[in-house]
Amino acid sequence: MKSITGNEAVDAAIDRVFAGERLDEDDYLALYDEPVADLTAGADHVRTHLADEGVTVRGLGYVTRGICSQDCGFCAYSARHDTDVEQHGVVPPELLEEAAKRAEEKGAERFNVVSTRRGADSELRTDEWREVLTAIELIREETDLDVDACLGFLEADEAEKLAAEDVQHYVHMVETSPRYFGEITSTHSFEDRLETLRVAKDAGIDLCSGIIVGMGETPADRIAAALELREVGIDVFSLNVLSPAQGTPVAEKVGDSPDITREGILKTLALVRFVHPDVRIDTNTARAPITREEFLESGGNSLQLGDMIHYEDYPVNEA
Image 1 (tube, one colour):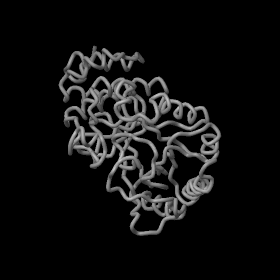
Image 2: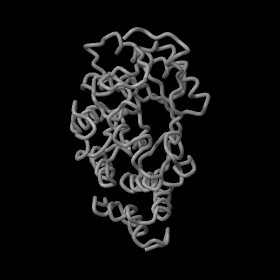
Image 3: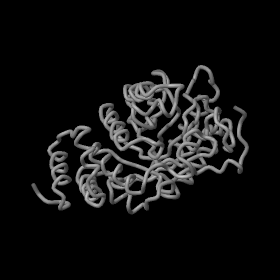
Image 4: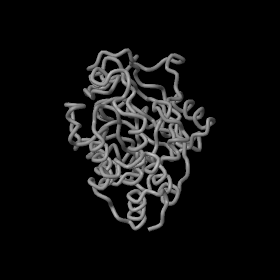
């Protein structure tokens, strides 16, 4: 066994990953107890040799915001929680195009068109669905960006239409483990989220999914979620750190800061790299107590620019 980190357990895990072996949950839980510096060094080695896309940057823009019927306990955009988030209807496609151009000027290579609704619901909200498709088409035609979409739950015909519009990735988070999922939301199931990922994949769209950490879950929950996504077969893993929104149940539970330490974030990131050795792993470091350098040296290789749209600067259509 070649020494990479000087830590026998971590180096053994690296060898197993390079041999194409899939470690199990017990293996990852044992690794979690190893020193953070050794884990992150090992994850960086795996990323360097197996995730060869290098660092990518993506921007995002909301097509709707703050009008979701679901009760996700962390989400400021749920209509069921008393938060200060201003709600907006449908953003005109031309303004999403402008946002995408600004993101491109700032170095983005991808742009994610996001809705905070429960799902695309193209039959119920036909006009809104048409606006989303128009925005995607404009961004593809007027920029060199790859376009991703995050529109909630999908039906098969909706996924096929997005694929026909050359959407590169469908972004749909599982948030946490199957065990802890019921602590976060009651209006849909973990399996519902997996089903939308499968629908998008069956349509030929690559997948971006991941978790939010700091909601009161355990390290075992984070690992379990990552393993579930390994079975689905995702292309991008998004690791997000909770930004507690006042008025949400999760914020009431954890307080003003996420229920995870900086070391816990780095260890989770490193283990996600061991679970998913060849996928892109992204985050928004502006919302996490780690630097971009730490993220990129701990197994990550994709950064979010954040929301490129300032809603107060333009009118929006009524929902």
